[in-house]
Image (cartoon, rainbow, N blue to C red; front, side):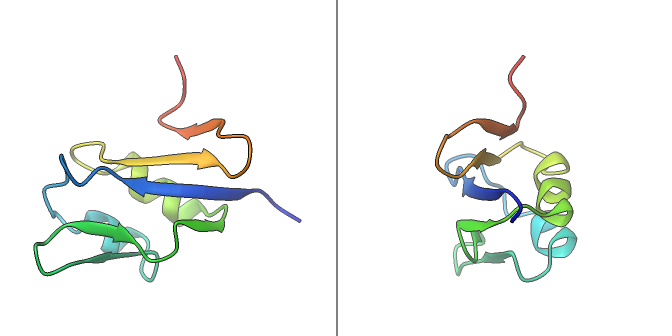
Length: 77
């Protein structure tokens, strides 16, 4: 079985660009305030979700390993 991730969007900095919605269709949605939310905060590791996080224009998406909390994105320096 592959890694499981916890995905969060910091809505205090999300600008609602919808890049995550387009890059990882079905994994993110925008609410009525045009703020992003993960459809399922606990998800299987996915290249599309990682791509969405890496390409968020304000770096509002964080991904950690479920259980350990080890950072996936952004990576630790």
